[in-house]
Image (cartoon, rainbow, N blue to C red; front, side, top):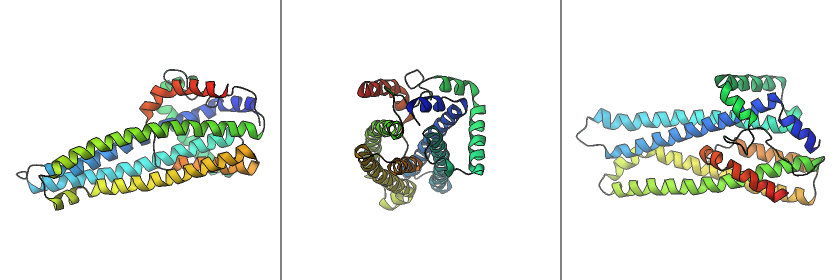
Length: 283
């Protein structure tokens, strides 16, 4: 395995379809994740409905909103699982890491899901598959780029370093955006809290409180895996081994499967900038 082979493999049409399907799935997961949050917020803020309204409306709105939030959360998890599996296969094949971990049944399911997603929007897929990260809109061609020739473990590890570097940039953006949104929503909620009954607020806020607890747990898992990835990467830089590369890849795959999503809009806007920045770092 060397960087030339990786370049060829990643731009095979079948692999480009898989990368496109993975991106669509992650973007879809992000959309349903936002829908879940909106439903939770609607449920929480329903406490401020006029008391003159019929009780079936006052009680029905938060109940229905919480049900939708639950359904949207399930769909989000399913989309994340699909997207992470597709990315896992892509890296496994392109980097030649533990390819035998997939059964024939799993491979057929991957192909089936990929084709379904591709056929839903073949024109958009063609654009994504022909564009690189430096184009507008950013695409999935040349997912891994090389400034020099890498061979063996060095080629595999360079791709893993690109994965972790991009992830670190998007995590920073996601964290800042999340803090700003929570601050604004929390401020509005606290301001309105002063004029309402505490018990009613707790009842209407059950959905959003559960969602916040879920987010804390998932982000904590994400943080723990990220720390393991950093440690594994530092070990490989000192002493690269096949076992170390496989362990790091397993951690990367596990982190992708965690229901913590980046912000696709920011990725589209900053992909060109980050692509050029990384080229300068390694050139």
